[in-house]
Image 1 (cartoon, rainbow, N blue to C red):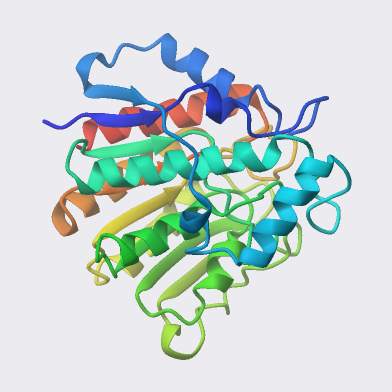
Image 2: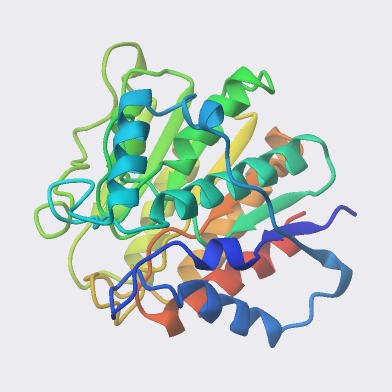
Length: 315
């Protein structure tokens, strides 16, 4: 049985901000420490990867934006967006490392070296093709989707997002794409950043109906999540995906400083288990999970180790 790949290395711990920032540089370490207390044996394989090349980033991002972001980070001043994502020296290179790790995991799955994979620092779902947003400099998800299509001839991709925030950078990039099957459970945008993702947003033009956004209300927990996930499964059941992406932000768990939902890690275990089952029947088990948000270190460690545990079970 093929192992589950967990991406790691010091490169991933470099993405974030110092000085008590919610997306701090200690997030990856919190996950690694939790993983060190578990024994998966040969079922888990850990690897690192080189940074993504600029031509790989250009599969999703505009060259103009990449040049701006690299220059602004090198100048070590200001913001990369309207005020959420501070520029700092080394940040652009750290973001390239995140995308490089996502591409490495994708390649390993497509080459059948591993059964599925997890990227703890990744799932940067707010960045658009031409802009940063919400702590996200580069959109590793978008680069992976474009790489699946241009390099691996994979057209039908399912993207599931359970982060407390709407995955706007992915949704709007593929709003008219009928072969990107999008399902997002998040806290209602009336109460939560970025204020998008209403249930009436189901794609546009040829992409109409290939997308669903499911809004939970402040205080909702596992019961509401599990009910919403039934709708996710129903949405994906006829999509026949060739590859499944899961953005499993842990900021929907009870006590997150930026979220208003009350999940337990049961939500992450359930989502991973059910998507692995779908992947086994539809696409040879191809699942790449990406950590996303989560600003309580205890919560993200608990949720993401549950993701790994269920990826291992679901190979």
